[in-house]
Amino acid sequence: MTVSLDHLEYFLLILVRISGFMVAAPIFSLRNIPMRVKTLLAIAIAIVMFHVVPYREVVYSTTIDYALVVITEMLAGVIMGFMANVAYYILSFAGQIIDQEIGFSMVNQYDPITSAQVTITGNFYTYAVMLMVLITNMHHYLIRALTDSFQVIPVGSVALDFGIYEVMKRFVVDYFVLGFRIVLPIFASLLVVNTILAILARVAPQMNMFVIGLQLKVFVGLAVLVLMFMMITGVADLIFREMISMIKDTLPYLGGAGS
Image (tube, rainbow, N blue to C red; front, side, top):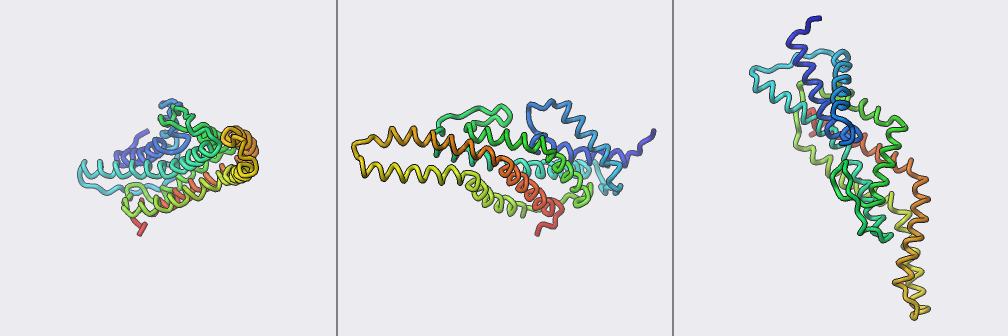
């Protein structure tokens, strides 16, 4: 079997974009996944895409021009993966607020996957949603979004638009809105508890409401948290919709048509 140099260069550009996506995308970028598995998966997807994506000649004049094309393809894959992965930070934000309301904010864990200090509830939500994504095969949709990007942005035609910061501006709004939507049951229940404690403090000032409230907030918070775990599918749906929205909003800016 013979392969022309032009087709080999075209295949390498496809592989570079897919590899960039694997480096930053959720689930695929986990450090506990062996590098060989990631490499073979990227090569396998690139081989399939090479036979699916119509061949388009990549225009360049010098080796430096081709290197610039490789860099832009890599950046396109990394940006798409990062935009999908950033949606997981909503879970850490929500978990931090929940632990702060319950009284667990001082207890942090070291996450070896992200190399960051995370709260207990935030870590639980992150792994629970990740598990939901895997058992429902939602990660296939991430691969589908990656493959569809070759139709929206053909190989060799990546043109980064600096207006991509508009996507991050919209995400910051969704970051707080979705985070507080997840936290709302805990926040509402503990608001009722604080109201009751305030009334008791006026009715029976001899009672130490600090000691009572500290334990009561923990019991009520954990009880509501158990009920919230039954709605984990809804939380996973919110995060996954945000992932898809971020990728769709990012693609026009990678094709130079964002403005």
